[in-house]
Image (cartoon, rainbow, N blue to C red; front, side, top):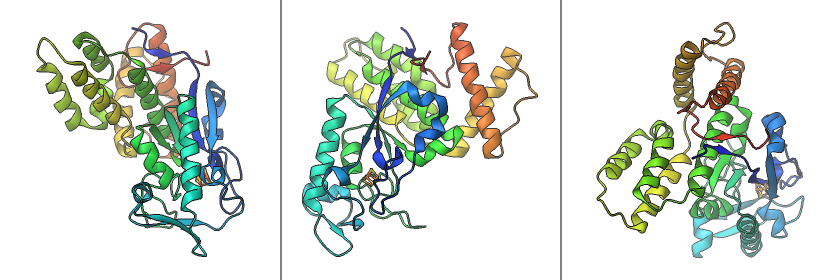
Amino acid sequence: MERVIRNKIKIGISSCMYGSNFRYNGKGYDITKHIGRDRSNFIWYPICPEVNGGLGIPRSPIHVSGESGDNVWDGSGRIRDRSGRDQTDKLISGCVDGLRQLKENQIKVYIFMEGSPSCGIYRTSLKNNRLGKPPGVFGSLLLKEEIFLIPAMDLQSPIKKWDWFRRMYSFLWVDEMIIDSKDSLYEMWHTVKFLCQEVDEKRARILGRKMANLGKYVEDEKLSEMKREVLMMLRKPSSLSKIKNRLWKHYKYYEKKMKLDVEEVYEPRDNVSMGRLAKKITEIELELYDRGEFFSLSPILNRSGR
Ligand code: SF4
């Protein structure tokens, strides 16, 4: 089976991170400039739940009154602006519309603005040392819909960007795969298991053991459950040190194997050397692919722009 993605990937993105001045204070930032030339390999769908819901620009900043954005959906939380006005209905309508756009266009990936009470996933406040009440209202929907979520600011770091993208390609590849037998399940697992082990070793080993113990006949429900478990592992955030250590170890291995020019890359200690390593490793991935070899660190490649 081919381990490449050839069609352009559709990506939803918080509008204010796509250069639209949609934030409550009329500001925005184009985070996609950090993707460089590869930016045109994707189809972008900017979405802003607050503006979609009719909150306007500029607007009074909103906050969640309740435990988190989840509570807005179960009816126990509300959204208020700074002057105490209830903006719950407007935001709900903007979020529902945003989700409709994602679903109608079969978009499985969303780059979100962390720190927003709407789009935030792991924090809904930008203030230092305060997480706010995560997830945000739109973030809550995206988590439940099992969308692949990338924090926008991580794209500024070459290593984190490389990590998110290799996992996004694997996530989309697994998601597309029809798992209707033990053979197809094993094929999928053989392809992405090293990546899953890297993200969550314990969970991956448990899943590996469960697969090894499957009986002769496996129900469709069980196959879907295992596929879902893999998808959930692939979207789990990783840490910079974890990514860097794995990347460097593998780089050294392939450096020897491929007799690379060792002058060019040093063990990364800062952003510049990490950027150089990420660039080098991307070249290795493509070279290995062209030679017909399997690169377990990035099992699925994106060749949509080539
Ligand atoms: S709702 Fe989301 S897209 Fe809109 S301004 Fe806030 S963070 Fe950006």
